Amino acid sequence: MITTYYQLAAEAAETEHNPIIPLWEEVVLGIIAFGILCFVLMKFVFPMMEKTFAARVDAIEGGIKRAETAQAEANQLLEQYKAQLAEARTEAARIRDEARADAEGIRQDVLAKAREESDRIIAAGNEQLAAQRESIVRELRSEVGTLAVDLAGKIVGEALADEARSRGTVERFIDELGAGSAGGRR
Amino acid sequence: MTGQSTVLAADVPFPPSVEDFYLPSIVPWGGHDSYWFTKITALLWISVALIIIFFLVTYRKPKLVPTKKQWIAESIYGFVRNNIAVDMLGKRGINFAPYLTTLFVFILIMNFWAIVPFAQISPNSHIAFPAVLAVISYVMFIYIGMKHHGGLKYFKHALIPPAPWFILPLLIPIEFFSTFIVRPFSLAVRLFANMFAGHMLLLVFTLGGFAMLNANVWFAPFSVVSWAMTIALTFLEFLVICLQAYVFTVLTASYVQGALADEH
Amino acid sequence: MGMTAVAYLIAGMLVWGGIGLLVDHWVGTKGIFAGIGAVVGIGGGVYLIVRRLGA
Image (cartoon, rainbow over all chains, first blue to last red):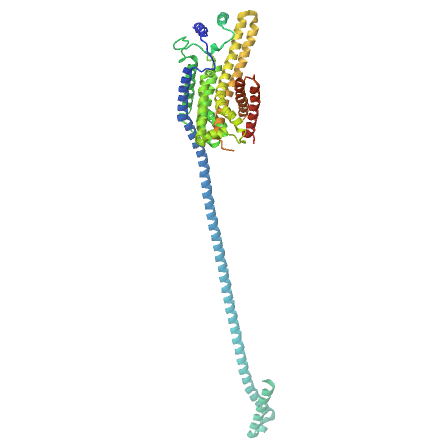
């Protein structure tokens, strides 16, 4: 069969062919075949591929975008927390400072009051002391007069029973004593 | 085996001629002047079917994380899209990537028949197919140029180079010739001639081996050398196949690039 | 790029060489104008390569 085919080929050689001149049947078939190929591939296959490429790019870029959004969100939260923390810290510091200031104030108050009190107590003591001295001095003075009269009566004896004289002497003595105390002591 | 090869050798015409490219038709069997269903057109349809089936099967349910088959299909598209279309046309290249990929895959598979056992002839060794593709590229870049620059302004842009007026009469015919006449022919003829010559070379060395064996049994070692050459040339052919598919696609892209280029 | 440059050179040579050939045919000379045309065309091609691809 192959042999006959090639014999036929040899016979076919009698009709001359020019390889540069296209056979119109082949041109027609070529156009149809290539047209079908183009139609199918360009309509059904390659646009799908472009879509897949786009989807792939999308998937990757979408993933990146999602990650970026999540990152941004986390960052924002972190910032927020930090801000809150800082706020709380300043608040605490403020409260502490206030408390410290209050305590200081209270201490100062107490101190001042105590000092006042002590001053007052000291002043009162001083006054009392002075008053007591005054009365003691007064008592002493009258007692010293009596004692001196007694002592003088005892020393001189009953000889000086002359009332008038004795009264005058005592009076003089007391006056001298009063003048002496007025001039010398007070 | 020996007997068969002798029989075959006896039938072998040497040297091969242009007529070896025009095999009798399959339906009707052995017809000489019927080209609707020949080995060439059969291979054409098989190519189209293979490509469509491959892409539809591998890309029926695309997933974000591709399976191995899907990855292969994507790599082919991605190669043309990124390395040719976007590389040469920038962001606009994405619009042209589907056509350029279709073109690339079609030429590649069509060329590939040149080294597939039992097929061993590329439909692209018939100028009709490269010519069709070249005409499509030609019409496409002119259309895109006219759309981009606005009608006839494109021709003004394409034909009138930045030069003093007195040299223009010298330059305009050259521009016209190189842009609007040489391009389609060079595209078509480059692909066609490469596949034609490749097939011719393989034929020469394969048939030459048989012819030598036929002439004298003592030439057998030379036949073996000849067939070894065929194998080596098959590898070379593989290189040419890929290169020509790439070159055709790149040139089409570069023509579109030229049509889209703005005044510099 | 390389392809475009080669295309310009060949196109220049072919176009102006061809025009020269026609002139030869009309005038009756034997290839003088074709030669001149080819040289001029290559010159034009080089000029175009420099203007379009250089700079």
